[in-house]
Amino acid sequence: MRVGVLYSRIRRDEKLLLDELRDRGHEVAKIDVREERFGLASTTAAVDDLDIVVDRCLATSRSLYATRFLDSYGVPVVNAPETGDVCADKARNSLALAEAGVPTPATEVAFTRESALDAVESFGYPCVLKPVTGSWGRLMAKIDSRTAAEAIIEHKETLGHYEHKVFYVQEFVEKPGRDVRVLAVDGEPIAAMTRSADHWLTNAAKGGETEPFALDERATELVERASDAVGGGMLGVDLMEVGVEAGDDAAADDYTVHEVNHTVEFKALDDATDVDVPARVVDWLERRAAAAANDAVDGDAPEAHT
Amino acid sequence: MASDTDTLHAEDPITGEEIELPADVEVGEIVDSPVTGTELEVISLDPLTLEEAPELEEDWGE
Image 1 (cartoon, rainbow over the protein chains, first blue to last red):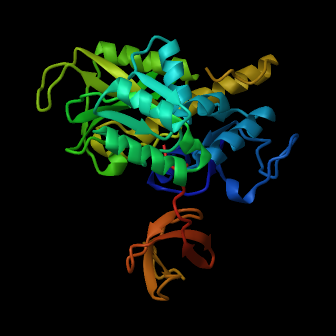
Image 2 (cartoon, rainbow over the protein chains, first blue to last red; image 1 turned 60 degrees about the vertical axis):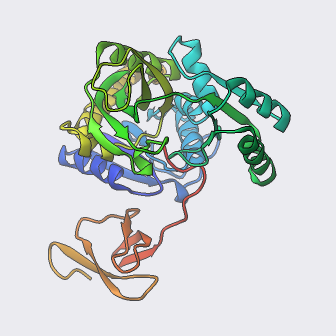
């Protein structure tokens, strides 16, 4: 197949993917979005003959616009722009999970310093204040007191981009020193790992230690539902175990899904587990490209990216 | 620029020193400078040219 890869930086994740595609004999067209222009009817990027385009843009804004434009030209693209729209915004992400009945931490959004403080006080201490956009655990605040809340909110109001004036306040979930990252394709888990740290932020990007994790039936079900809730695709679903103490090997009573990521990194999962993650991702891309080709033959619109 | 089949050599754009890179680097790839640790981007392969990679921005990442 002919695969387009949207990118602006080739990291180890992209390298693994490119190597797997080439090893299988697929034709790869790298599309550096920094060099292209996207018009209402066409683009300077050579996408006409591609069977599928996979979005690996690191910048969320580029990812959302580039996939939206390609989708409008009828080019099959994963993930779908609709999925990106939901996942890129923590408020929309939380709403989508809640609307689908997926357990997710209690969350409130407020627009002023006063209402944000009211939200913080209603959750009690500690609670968490996050930017609605952003990643890798950056600019997340665990708030332990009212004075801390006042200072953080004032700083965000004074120094922040306008998006930082959307105050996303969330309950603090007592997790057992780790959370669970699952890479899933259209709801089917490929690999899962825990990310552990003494710090309350356990992201692998923050240096959390990783170990393989065996998903139980409940976790598998929640991953599928969370994927459906945001429109499917290749996703990083983040769960926290409920009812497990740190260092306890007991199974979780339940899970809460705190986030679904649409531009998922997989090098840490590839290192932490025995799963050949790039191979499984390319298996899925081959299935998606075949489905898109069938849709084109049938005269249907491009696959609905569900 | 290539010295053998396993490695390539290029000029570090910050220090001017010659640095060694794997032979399979590709355009757009981010490599760490072995001299300064700075992230460098491969701009072209022939000749092998590096530039300091763009700074991370707020909306970058997963």
